[in-house]
Figure: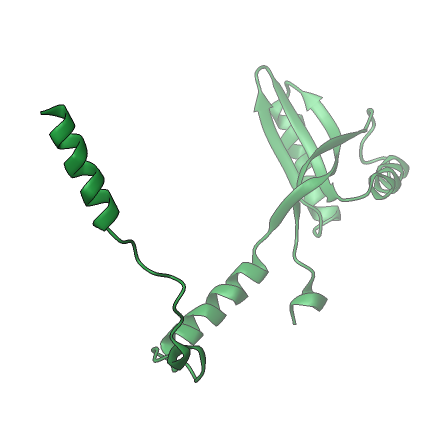
Length: 147
């Protein structure tokens, strides 16, 4: 019985042919391709590209640690003073019990962060220590390259 089944399996495997890929249809290799699509797809693709260009991206950079305290009123007061004096910079407030940490700015270059640190110290707005800390920052898209 085993010999008979083996014989049938061999005969079937010899007679079975796979798809022949050696023949190439030359009528298909030449010509043009017509794509029929809805023109609204182009509008959607352009809108999505414009939206992605305006997104804020993140990357490695530096922030200034300006305050680390457990006095909430002091932290809120300094935050409001920084926002009034430097409206183009962001102030980040985080709570890690029992301390409130106030970080300032998004700097891609450590030299820029140190220059801003010196400016803050000269203004006497912050009387304590200011530390430059590496952090993931928000990188605003460059308006000159997106247009």
